[in-house]
Amino acid sequence: MMNTTADRQQAWAQRAIPAWPGYVGFLWALIYAVFVRFYQAAGGTIGLPGRLEKPETFYMASYVAGVVVLFAGFVMLALVKPWGKVVPASMPWIGGRRVRPGILFVPALLGSAFAVAHGVSGFITKALDLAGMMTIHFQGWEVVDVHRLILWDMLFYEPWFIVIGVLAGMAAFHYAQASSMPRSVIRRIAIFFISFVILLTALFVWAIMVLF
Image (cartoon, rainbow, N blue to C red; front, top):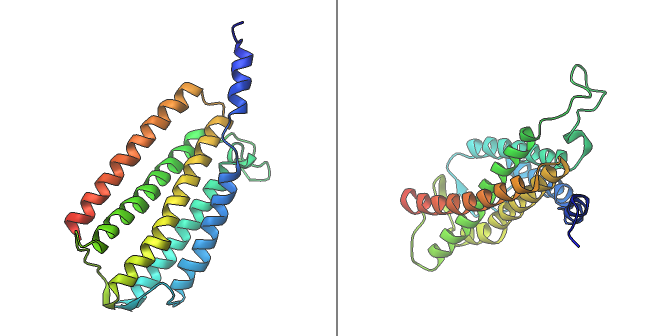
């Protein structure tokens, strides 16, 4: 017996991407923003194996990075909450209006691609540095233990980027499904997204090898 349209839609709904990546991504971003970036912006030295040339510039950069990460966390939360689809009625002037899917979906996918490519390319190039196949010249340090710096990046920072990128991507595709985006469109976007991540990763690896 052939499946009816209703049967296919029900099967598609049962395979829906869950909402939990949005919640976990929000917590992941919040923890990193507060306990890493804002901590370092306040002068914390854990994870900094050396002495910086311009500490004040680094503190400001860490603070800005923390704000950006925190904002990204709220975007991931919006992807799985009702107010990510319809503006709460309590909001003046725009309350009750539907949110266009692209406003959240496109930035979330771009951020996901950047984060995954950043983490994977960083891991690859630093592994090549440790293996003696290339040398990365780290800028902005008066004195630095390069070996410790690379290990910090490989064991902490780069995995954080990869995880947050995967969570953001999953939350974005959950949002697409919940917004009733056609399955065929989601599949095409997913193929393009994976191809874009691979291309961006290769570009980042090339840039690091050439510029640093």
